[in-house]
Amino acid sequence: MTNNQNEFYGFTQPFADAIAEAEKIIADAPHVRTEQDLLEGYDYLAGSIKASLHMAWAYDREFPFFAQSTGPYTKMGLDNPDTLYFHANLRPEAEYVVTGRRGSTRDLSFQVLSGDYSAAEVPDSPSAFDDRSIDIADDGTFEVRFGPGPAARNYVTLAPGATMLAVREVYSDWATEKRGEIRIHRVDTLGHAPEPIGPGQMRKRYEVAGKMLISRLRTWLQFPEWFYLKLPVNTLTEPRLTPGGLSTQYSSVGHYELPDDVAMVVTVPKSDAPYQGLQLGSRWYVSLDYANHQTSLTTDQAKADPDGLIRFVISERDPGLTNWIERTGHDRGFVQIRWQRVSREMTAADGPSVELVPVEQLKDHVPYYEDQRITPEAWADRIAVRQAATAERMLG
Image 1 (spheres, rainbow, N blue to C red):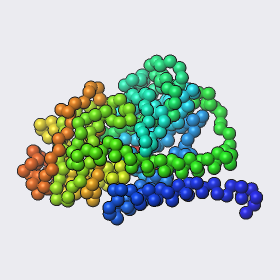
Image 2 (cartoon, rainbow, N blue to C red):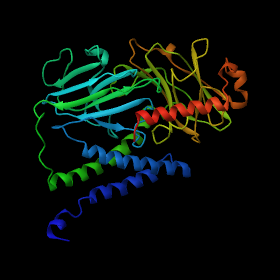
Image 3 (tube, one colour):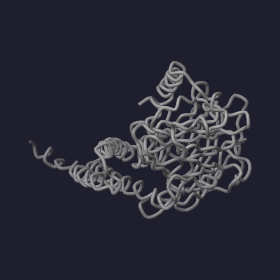
Image 4 (cartoon, helix red, strand yellow):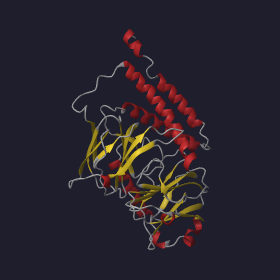
């Protein structure tokens, strides 16, 4: 090894140390009871390692670009199977231009964050809005500016301490809706190039990636303690504004614990909101496998009953019903219903009711039971549609 090579030796050690600490966090997680819990924890750890490296290398406030915040291989924060998440880093004193083309997805929202999610707090959200608040041309193109200037149509004032712009593109019908386009540049650096990275910056990136990894794991293990686990088991809350400042999103949350012969029947009115969806999550606070199993449903994917209600049947055993939500071996987990792009306040009347029913007795407890029956062949077709749609919009 040359003297020059020796100078760089050990750059990765802070990240290696963080991985060792992260493995201990996974192994010591209080909810771990079974081998499945632990194996899923190690899978979650792998995604978190990948995401932390990705986030550290994508951190650039002078030459920003949109990076995918979470995805099927980098899950976190009870990620919504219906949402594509993007983010770019900001400086509040600089001006940025976001351009793009609106897709046909059900919702497109923007959120400026101040600070970071941590095990102690949720970041402030100085500004959150959806694309109804901006001008979009007939061909779907748009331009929005973010900076220190005065607020105006298509200009968002960055509050002191603003650090990140988060963008969410939300699907309801996976098979037909198409994603849009989005780009960002900083006004005073457009056309220029960053300086080559030096040894100090490279070392710092590995250090930052390690800190991100530990913070990510601790934060999202703590989050359910704040908002879910203190609620009575096998219940769901009334609709409430989603924590974190999303001004047009309401949610109903809860956690379940069910034996294999009992189903949780969640009944909720089909909403007038453009997006409504239910999903399950594991105790690692991430979505279950939504590509190969029906662990989530939107109003477009679910079958509403003639009385205007949607009845989701959460169970391990297959009840032979269209709106079956598969537990996939998870006898404990999280349930969340989201309403997005709302134009009015959501009330208890919009929210869910919950009933626990033995699977063998569902026919006697679920209205329109016969209308909801589905054959194994039709079920396989539903899964095939999910697989194809996930592959198209969520390239790994």
